[in-house]
Length: 196
Image (cartoon, rainbow, N blue to C red; front, side, top):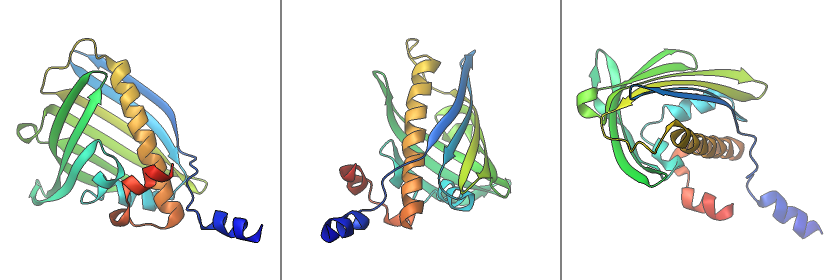
């Protein structure tokens, strides 16, 4: 019994409290708007540092294959690169974006893509983090218009479903990092998934 208890205590925490509390998505004239609220059981400072860790953020999910800070600025704001390889229903696409990252306060930042260096005509986000107990509420807003053809059968519902699923997985993995005091640079996604 003592050995069993010690073995159980040695297993890293895998339970998750993360939840997507609300998502609103609309599409009009080829433009998408999203408003979402997510909760995760990790402190705001930790979550904020992960969200802005472009050099390592791609470690959290297979769908984001590359993220990094670029050695350039625009209007005095740093630029970041992201490559996404994902499928929604039967439609698969690799997307790239270069965006300005504007930190506007403690736990708040905006991004805006550079259209001629991205697969979007425009893509703007607003992130705001707020403490809730020992955890964090994330308020997220997105306005975007892709610069590529999207099959008409893929509506906002399909994109919303994929976005919710991805966001929840990322939130759960951030909780895991916080609970086990693991730096993002040391996160092994394959080992994490094998332990699920």
